[in-house]
Image (cartoon, rainbow, N blue to C red; front, top):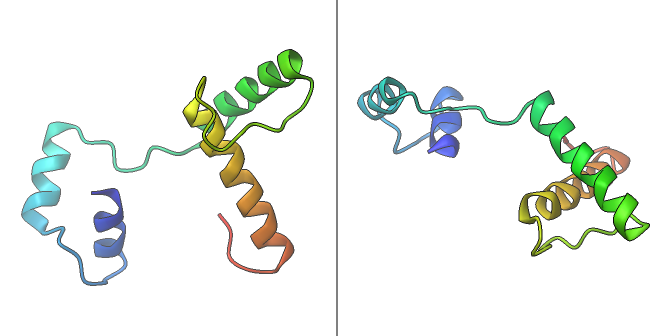
Length: 89
């Protein structure tokens, strides 16, 4: 739904109609979940991981903390894109 809303807000074709947007918003649906608080939360989890494991080599599918694994993978992707001069967040 978040992808559809982003496409809708950019004026691109989307299954997200005004009615669907309104209904989800009325329910209290959170449209944007990423932010500095989430980044800092994952960063603190990475600090804990490093203190326990001795490195920052969190597997992308880390079974003990899947969100941390995805976050670390995303950070690496963003670094690579930035280094290549391509779009990053």
